[in-house]
Length: 624
Image (cartoon, rainbow, N blue to C red):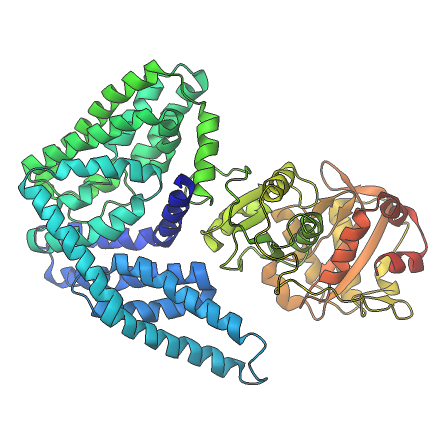
């Protein structure tokens, strides 16, 4: 249950986090230019309300639609959420978090239904009209149903907040806020509930305490200071100072969650700390002009009206002090888990690696996983081989799984797990914030892949042994005289018995041979070397597959593969490549060949033969 709540929280966070910059812009506009701001300006103040009313909900909904339904999901979600916005008098941030994924799901299901049913030549017509008409229907539903529903919920919450304020009970919300943060529901609370209510209050009074409830960095600071001073584990004590800086000045509250998980009773510290701070702010009538996001002391103070700077700072200090004192008691009483164990538990709870946390290659919760995507820069080489090899390996125990590959910039929205090289991790997170990320060094043989295999194998298959969507295996085409794979590789594209050269020379030689055979233009070799500088194309087991970057696909004329054999090897860093496959891909014609290479890799005798034979016909036969 805890993991499911955490995954839900991370999904909501995935809609908000890419748009934090827009929240910062709105916050500064409010802090600076509203009537009670630092620099009141009637003209610039006119931007504040439209940005909150329209821009922020549309951005959130668009991101949610994209996470579920890709680019088409992004467009239909933006259309649909307009119905929610116009059908409610409240700011529809919460409505956007609901409507965005719904719209993405609707267009995704339509695309699945329409696949294979659209007459040739009508694709663009159907694609555009489906988004337009379904978006219209969802906008109407949003206007008459979801908008009013969210308005009712927010009205009830507003009444509840007013009741808590009038009866001096608002500090009790800290009992829910702090545990919710550890379950990654902080963005849903802050931007989905507190911000809309706070915006209404700030419009009337110029400030709102609602903006202070979740963003106060004091409670987390107290926890980290307690571990820094009193932890019995030397590693934990040494890590705490760095975490303090990241949390307090960077606003990344997630950094202190593992410290709470080490000893869950420590959560009492930030709960009581935030309780005291909210009570202090309630008594003094404090509030912020806009959302303090991310929740750093810098953002917190930047959103503070100029007449309340000392009050805001005092509330942070109170929260930190109280949290420190109480947390210290529990830190000294129990050794708890190690920081490493707590971080692992947090990764399992998150089920997707996003945000500012350090990259990890550990495998989290894999329950419910249906689609694994291997991603590389271009999506034509290393990821294709990695996906093929892993698919062949896992199919016997998990025939229900879909294992595919893509460019790191076009990861499918329904990916549950994304496997990529460490250097591409940041791009993968941006492209698939909803997915769990597994970082590797080698697509063919990596400990993280072994852990992923073990975790997925332990799960029970969730579909029939041969699902309806499973790819159909067709017989490989018979080789023509001197050709294999319908001309993707030819006799002229194979060189055997080459003397050892440098990695750069081998890659350039492959690029020049691809150009000589008409697959690419002369600049493609430079793109191959650029790709190698990004991250190695050495696959392991003596095989390298250099290819160009995704930005240079226009230099490819048609799909083709060349093979350069170096019996004494080419140094690709820590290991030598004996078989260098130069790849140029337009469509998917070359993927079958790479699949056959993977099959050869599983046959040690055949692989060794490929590394040494001078018989081109034998090599062509193996590649069939």
